[in-house]
Image 1 (cartoon, rainbow, N blue to C red):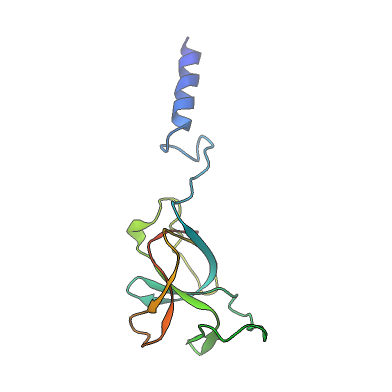
Image 2: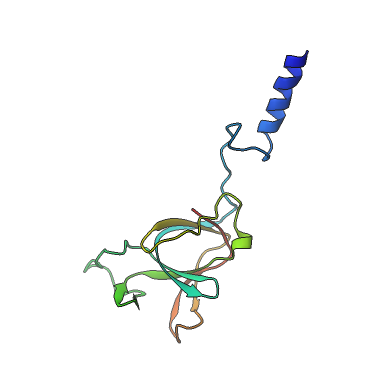
Length: 136
């Protein structure tokens, strides 16, 4: 009877989020409508971070149109986008904010990116991701 109760207890614990890794339950992805993969470039202040859809050392193919270039620390980056990350809004298992320049990250957000001005970057409009729920 005790073995049956222990087995039942283990099954109940495996169904909750109390010990997801210790019992073998895979971590759930954060709720999101949109995700994007990019290489981290730099911190832009006020919770904004700059990413590029290309690798940091990739040249823009000649067939691609001129699009969202930005020079950061004397390096020209193509197809840049800004991500507003509020750590308190991130899913508990998707808070990888220990970013180094050119480290690749997958970003999850509750809505698609939109084009708008970013404080401190003049009148230009860039793609901006807000409502971020996870960074992996």
